[in-house]
Amino acid sequence: MNIVVNAQVLVKDQLDGIGWFTYETLKRITKINPEHTFYFVFDRPYHKDFVFSDNVVPVVLYPHSRHPFLWFIRYEILMPFVLRKYKADLFLSPDGWMTLNTKVPVVQVIHDLNFEHYPGDIPFWTRKYYTTLFPRYARRSARIATVSHYSKNDIVQTYDISPDKIDVVFNGCNSEFKPLTNQQKIKIREKYSEGAPYFLYVGALIPRKNVGRLFQAFDIFKKQDNNNTKLLVAGHKMWLSNHINEAFQNMQHKDDIVFLGRKNVDELTQLYSASLALTYVSYFEGFGIPVLEAFNAETAVITSNCTSMPEVADNAALLVDPFSVESIADAMIRLKNDGTLRQKLIDKGKERRKIFSWNNTAEKLWKCVEKAMTLL
Image 1 (cartoon, rainbow, N blue to C red):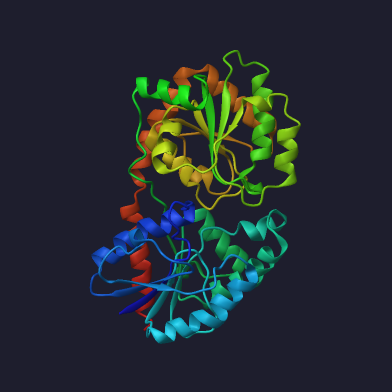
Image 2: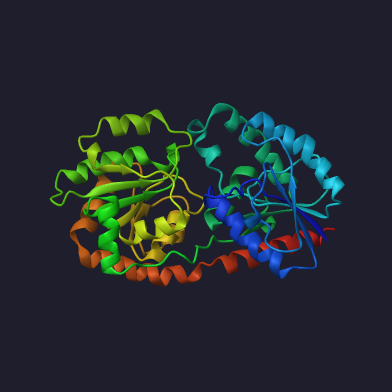
């Protein structure tokens, strides 16, 4: 069979949550299914690392899909041409974008519907594109995969989609996330935080990640901190909001926040392991891969008590109200002062992480594809 794959998120050294999902699942699926040909459609020159096996054929389809108007041209005008050219039997879209102008069965991965619940967090034209076309995509697709039971229920309720059409495929975690020795942790703190203990945030600086309230909570925490504790922020700016900027500018302890920018996997695993805890207090997530990364690096986790995060973390994290600065600050104070609690959460995280793996993710995504193939 000829399977055309939307591979626009596979950009070297720029993989985020959806990018890692795409990379890890396709790397496995293509290798264990040599009888099928996979046409990977990129929107720019591709890196050889993404041509996983001999049955992967890279295709570059311009223009770069980085604006809603270009998305429309790409998916509603150009992609149908690609599907015809390569005689596609199925179209697989790991990041949710697809086309309405084809009769080819589509397997669509919808990671979450944050744009439906918090539209004000997203630029106007991006929001219009998502809220106009994604409901139609969901109805048009042959099968839908999503990364948590929370997201499945959300898609069912928001788009009135039958639950029988949706498969849950949990995310996994990169195997390179591992704990460090105590001596290694000391060196990492010397490198990044002047030797001081630190909390860690990993993720893009976008509104729903709730970084503004995290800054405010850190300011409250600092009022009782006697160890010069830092907050390290590892992530890139996307739609940096006024709220985040204002929260930072109004801080009394802004000098104790260190912005690191995007970091690679090797650097992140070191940052996780040497931290007091991951502070991941987003108010909307379809899954939350950093929680798994922290479990694997064996550090404690503070995360939110809403959307998918309780499902992922279970009892292996301190759950907080992401809309309450005091709730976040209290969790930071507790973990900083209670080493026994930190170790208890680490031990629970070591157990919790066992149920998540990219091998399982790839296997379940392929089963979703196979269900769609039965429609041919």
